[in-house]
Figure 1 (cartoon, rainbow, N blue to C red):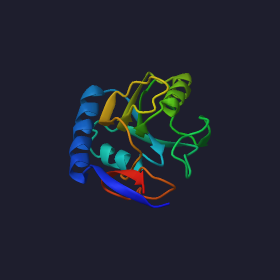
Figure 2 (tube, one colour):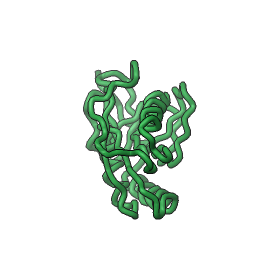
Figure 3 (tube, one colour):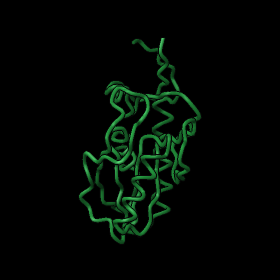
Length: 174
């Protein structure tokens, strides 16, 4: 199947917003023990850029849930294919996602981290998308609100393609 790619967010706009988010997050957690958790694979580019803008020396870790594969929607939630290694008990945790869409993954991760004793939990998402939201979750630090469309680039993929793009595009079937 071939696709048309429609530009949605430029590389310059991304870099500007990531710097702003880093400043907001740094101000919010000033002087507090912070663990930043990257949700792989989609958030890896956003996470790397964001960490360069967060001051205060946060601990960094990664986790991964089962992926979309070649589909555009997620099935059942909850399968960890990589878990965090940092102990989050008594620490503030910032979950860094590429996109919060249905809300199911984010809600599941928040429940798991809460059970592990995090002092507080917040979500930072590169894209806060409401088109298919099924579970109401709060994105505390949102990069870009997008209402609809299947987007790729800047870490987000379709069938493991397009992650390397420095901008974001809507993928539209021809």
